[in-house]
Image (cartoon, rainbow, N blue to C red; front, side):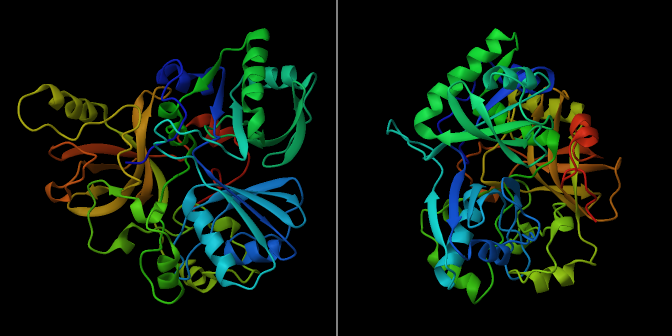
Length: 442
């Protein structure tokens, strides 16, 4: 089972915590669940330009971007947010698969780079002390600007989307990235881990003084914010097949690595693990591929570019079918697979079959309940000819033979799903800065 480490499940209750990023303001504690990787040295920019699909041609100082590497076969490994702090220094923040791939490429290459890796906190520390290099917070919501002005001691400089500037938090000077996880833009701030308590308490006190209902968000609500904004956080890393470099990489990975201990949950069970892979075009990342760069996987993506790739969508689950599944838990006999609220996250990656009649036409990859939208949603990919508004069927629950320890004995259910816009939240879709959320998947 995938676990969000250290941060409490709830601080008030997950419904009000979800509501707050739409109606007032939230404080996300992002300190513990992501790897941080520093890449610096004379070849740092050229190295990362080679490893990721993004172009570094116009990537100036105090900027950030979405960094996505693929395998030589063009399969997505994962993604991270990358910051450029100096001409020769970059900081990458995100899930472990991307950090591991970057570390491996540095190990096998002849680049003049130095890497410093700070892995995510232990999922189950069992009372052991936890230390990170940096704290990382994000404040967002319609009332966030009032808090920023208070903690800064005056108006905050206008920061462009995915640009970095400096602001005050009480007596501390901190870096701030214009960003937003749940659709409402905000600022992400970070600094030395030793300052974490001071920074958090200063933000909370400032919110009280300006009368903002700022909610600390626990790990239960945090994991669902992407459902409204349209980012698929946990595609299966496409690293389990392939010879040459890929075999060498699998040998390099440790037996306790994310890739080694992860699991796939859901109704889609295939003997071919490549059926779970995705490419950048399917996730909506095709528009920022740096075609002038010589990056790993370029030849494969060139072949994929004009193919009929699947496209990313939001699935809106049918209310009556969801209630039928829940009701079965109160009846005699074998129930349907329980839907844990707000996010039934029982595996590292999810893959539920989405059907049109007897044909599989899509894959649901991340699901959960939105109190703001009052419905179950999931993010996934569908065949190119599926249209917004189409009603399909999601098969919910594990087949009998999977034997997964993170699920109870259950039977599968058919849940109708309507193909809906991505991002689903109107605020994110209509007012978010131009990015992978607002670009066409073509």
